Structure formats: C-alpha cells, structure tokens
Amino acid sequence: MSDRDFDDSEADSLSDTSRMMPRLPPYNMEDQLLPMERRSTCGCWAWTLLVVALNSVVFLLNLLLLAAIFAVVLLPTIVVIYFGFQCHSRVLHSTAYYCKTILDDNSSSALIILGFVIMSPLIVLGMALYCSLVRRLRLFMCFQPCARAVYKGVKWQWYEEGGVCGCTKAWNMQVKAWV
Image (cartoon, rainbow, N blue to C red):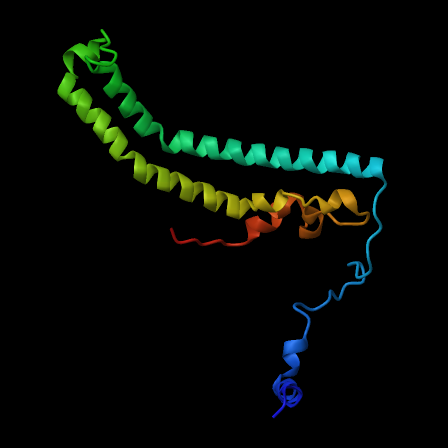
C-alpha cells in the first residue's frame, strides 16, 4: 500500500467535525466578521493612554480592596504581635502599665509566637474573602484589552455586560465557592 493510498483512506475515516471551526461565528450582525478599520497614529496613542489609564485605575482599585481586606482580617495578629514586641525586655521594653503588671518576658514571647501562628489561617481567610468579593463584583472583567486603542468600533466589555464591569448583573447571580 503506497503512502498516497494510506492518506486517502485516513482522510475518509475522519469525521466532518474535525474540519469544523474552533467556535461558531457570531450571529449578531454588529459583531465584526470583516477586518476592522485601524485608527490613525494620534488617535491610537490617545486611546492607548485612555485604556492604560482605565486599566491602572482598575488595578489600583483591586490593590486598595486587597489592602483593606487584609488590614481588617489581620488586625488581631497585628495587635497581638505588637503587644508582644512592645513588652519584651530584649526588643522594646516599654514602661507602660500593662507591660510592668501583666506581661513579662515569657508572656510577651507567647504573644509573639501566638501572633505568628494565627497569621497563616487569617491570610487564607483574607484571600478567600478577596477572591469571593472580586468574583462577585467581577472586577477583573473591567480590564480592557489594548485592541480598543488600535481598531475603531470595538465595544467596551462593560457596555456589552449591561453596566460598569457587569456589577449590576453580578448582584443578581448567586456565586458559591469552596475554599
């Protein structure tokens, strides 16, 4: 059997689905199937600055949310470690009333150890809270691709979802996550 006969028999055994496109074309006529029109150089730079500014604001919002959640969740650990270091004689050795009457070096060491031990579960709890809040608010959907700056007529993702980042739609959905 020659190589050509083998290729023909192999092509006959393939199904029609192997030649299909990876995904179906959009049914909406507003979605562009034809190549999009490129912006001018000045327009491209202006839109690039706008997209970068928007993505920077979204990044800072995510960072601020992360810092606020971790500040609240890790507050017990911060307080315990602070009092442990403040009252230990080899570290700060404060002259505060509670350091002289309640906390000695052994209890200060115990507070330091306790603070670092409870830090790990609280970090996991803080990360779970942050991830569930970001998922519910769909904050990562607010990042826009740079194709917005290059081509005309590209829709903003938040416009298609029905609000800024689809947050209004997200409040109606129930999100469950196992941690």
